[in-house]
Image 1 (cartoon, one colour):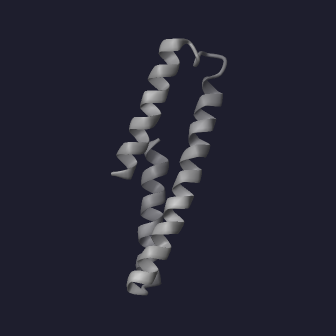
Image 2 (image 1 turned 120 degrees about the horizontal axis):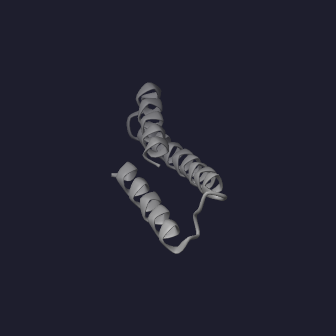
Image 3 (image 1 turned 60 degrees about the vertical axis):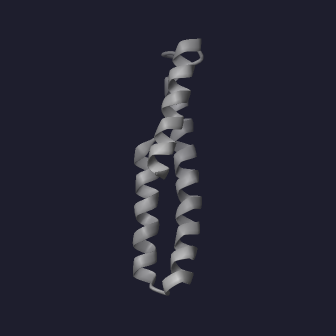
Length: 79
């Protein structure tokens, strides 16, 4: 699942950063902001592509919007 992959990658980066001292009290908010920005960018790209694919596949705009918003929400909140 896309949400699982996104959260696994974020978890791995956080653990690695904590273990190496790259993430500490001073820059933890920067790390969180960067990961949230990446989640938003990834979510928007994948949501746009899923909208195009589902709209071309079935021509139903309501279904296409629903699938796209669901994917965007899953990715954003998984990170």
